[in-house]
Image: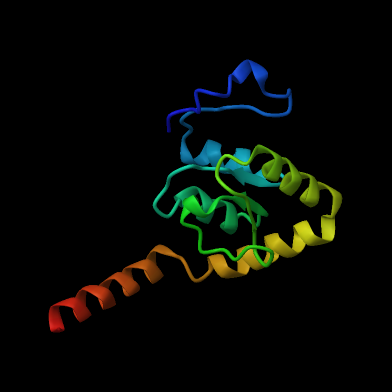
Length: 134
């Protein structure tokens, strides 16, 4: 996507990086090396990236604008769009509480099983069939 113009890559801490477009295999390797998936998006539909993080058992911090199917405090942390302090607080919360971080990751992973491409196809077919019947 288009990077936030308010944030300069040179201002990011050394442990943060912007990798740009990445192939699937390389992306999976990146994600497997992460402790938390932070996705403070301002606009998405239903972000595929969130589903990838869920399937890799990563705890997720995101905004409601991600279109996430996750539940705040149960399977993810939600922050307000543009709330930098809230984002830092959520990151610190997961850093300080490994048990909570693990709980979020496990619940997100369990939920990911309901969102395979096959499940998506079944739900879409049902919606399309219902709309043509009525």
